[in-house]
Image (cartoon, rainbow, N blue to C red; front, side):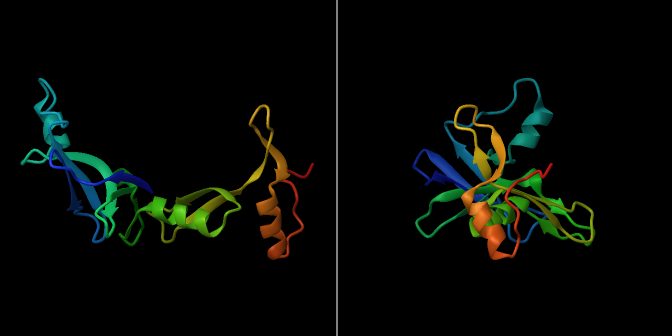
Length: 158
C-alpha cells in the first residue's frame, strides 16, 4: 500500500466506484497538473479522462480517517474467478507478507478458476557483495519452518 497524501486546493483526488467491484474504487485526479488530453488522439483521451475531465489513474485506492489517500493496487490487476467474483490480489499478497514475515514473495493466481491459489517464496540469506539470494533460509524463515515442524534449512537440497 502506498500513501500518496491529501487533497490540496489545486490538486484534487476522488475515489470513483468501479463498475466491476462493489468495494474497490479507482483514484481520479483533477488539477493544473493533469493533461488536457492526447494531441490528435481523441480515442486515447476518451479512455484516459472522464467526461468531466478527471484523469483515470488506473490505481485502486482508499483513504483513511485523516483523509490520506492510499494506493492499494491496480485496476487491471483484478482476478475474475470462474464464479465471477472480482478479487484484487495485491491486498491479499500484502496481508500474507505482513502476517508471515518469512515470506519474500506472494503471488495470488486463479483468473477464471474455481478457486484462488497462492505461490510463496521464503526469505533466504543474501550475499552481502553481490546481493544475490543464497540457498540458506533466513533466520525468520528457519524459525517459521521449525514452528510448523519442518526441518528445512536450505532452498535446494542437492
